[in-house]
Image 1 (cartoon, rainbow over the protein chains, first blue to last red):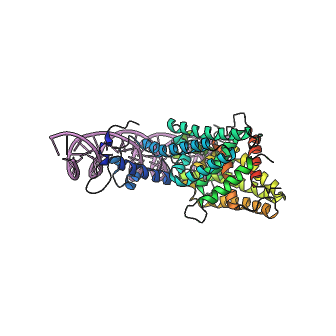
Image 2 (cartoon, helix red, strand yellow):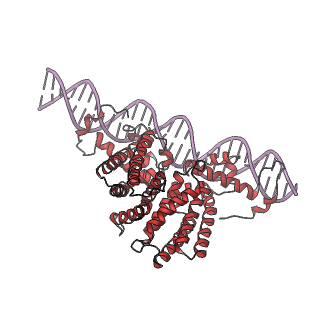
Image 3 (tube, rainbow over the protein chains, first blue to last red):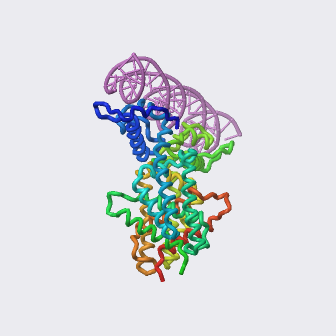
Length: 209
Length: 209
DNA sequence: TGGCACATATCAAGCATTTGCTCGGATATC
DNA sequence: GATATCCGAGCAAATGCTTGATATGTGCCA
């Protein structure tokens, strides 16, 4: 928020080749994401972030109003992508089981791809919860999942004896916890994780034949 | 660590009635647990803890060497109770499905009962991971669960096509996430949560008949 | 019983460091 | 020369922890 017209210089490039304008801001955001994920929000210093972005801490404040404004922008992009991704999947797939499988798959790929963002979102939940713009988007996510689950229950594909919201939270808990143990450099592939989790979770809520 | 003979005064009680010795230490530990859970480790100040324990920050250092020593003791008790509880359940119940059901149930009750400790364990995982004594106990927990799962797989009760460790982490993720949404003052009882989660998770890994 | 030495427990004050953030000025680009 | 960008220095507040003094209750011996 409170962006002005400073993007004017975004297309310029100084002879040294170091980024300016929007590009520089992106560098800072990436640096902040890395540092926040590594040390946690309140333990990461603006000096750490500046180091990672190859500048001095004072210079950060040319682009951001505060440390908190940085975390907000770090998470905004990820949440936007997530919401629109879920929305499309839920809209396009009529079969509720297929839709849910796709949601689970998308969620897991997101967790792996946006490792820093998800880590921050979990570890610094206390800090983040009060930020309205982020809470709103998480509510949107919840609604998409809930409606998919409800759709499946009404269609008789999913068991009807379970509280939908509780099921949602159970699924999300299992999925998001992946961030704490999955090692992208290890032997296990994302697809294997998707296979195991969607298998366990889907079988757990499917109607008994 | 490095306790001397200061427990001599544990049974004493000064005329004011304020606790001393071991009792006072317990008060501080409870205060620290509350504050750490509320604000996160690095954001909680020793002055916050002292306030909660009705004393001045300097006095804390009569009982503890450092702020980090406090979080260590806060978690030690909870982890001890958890490990022994799991161990007994796994030993006593021969039927793997029953044993796993009991483990899930114990875990969920623990999450609700030791809310502060579990919250800390999750939010400040970065701080805590390096603490050897805690990492060791968490490994013990993992082993108990894994052996129960393996037992069930060998007995044909649980599906054999899933990586056991991945299943364990999926279950644990779902269970521990409960801390973020369960409200003990709400309408939902712990038993209902146990019912839903054990139902979903157990059905998810049970062998198809 | 009274009084004294002692260990326990807490305070009050403050020190050194770290932290988020500010600001005037330098530098480069057009 | 104007604009965009970044530096360098530093300030005010907060934080973990230390320290010397002080109070409080206990055991002991005359």
